[in-house]
Image (cartoon, rainbow, N blue to C red; front, side, top):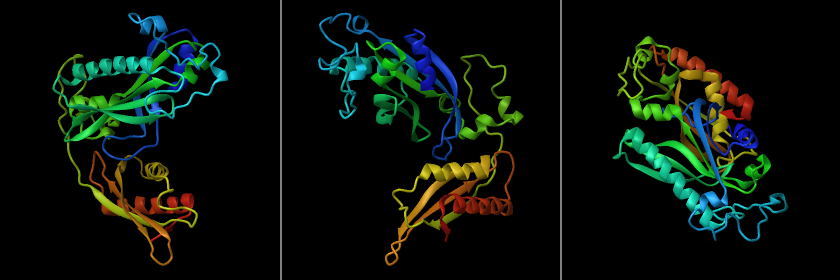
Length: 308
């Protein structure tokens, strides 16, 4: 998405919305899926646009040459701003960004929706934040945002501007708006689900009605890590990605259940619970066991682990 944003900035646009398909390795639960749709937005401003009433303020620190930004390294060691930007410019952009996004959340979910800002890390913005709303007794992330890294602007052409960007996951928004309990339903072709959203007006209030529910099957998987890997260096997302690849959409959740270091051998072990559930029929334990065995084979081959 950021690559396409750079292309649009290079073409001369300074404010735009962009919609795209996103593929990402991530956690596995009812609100995460490896494929989703996202709306991105970018707004860049020059000094005279940002400081209309305060012309004496600057976008950049005096030590930073905005005309030749490649001569200077832009640091993000300060949590409040990039080293090239003035604090005034960063704070004013942050205020604008958060005001617009809070207004959007209120327009979608009402003025009484509980929300909070969480500091975050994204590779192309700094500082960065996530906006969460309180949904189904949990905090649900609905968007990420931040001040665009100056290197991106400089490489795309407008090196005398400052910009913010945000990205909204459309499935997350729809889940909260329509009370959809599981993100996998977004890919269901079941007529009982699809018909609830067909031929509806844009602002019509819709509350999802469950078509049916099927029981879960839970199998644990535990394994010894190879000697050069520890419970702290093992990458959970690599494991989640493999489990999803092998098990497909019947994987509902994967949870880290236990970490263990053998007191004598010092070998490290992990245990995960894998929760299986089909959205449209009951799974038998026998077919779950078959998939679970294939997952075991795959992780042994991919990560050189030993099943316990």
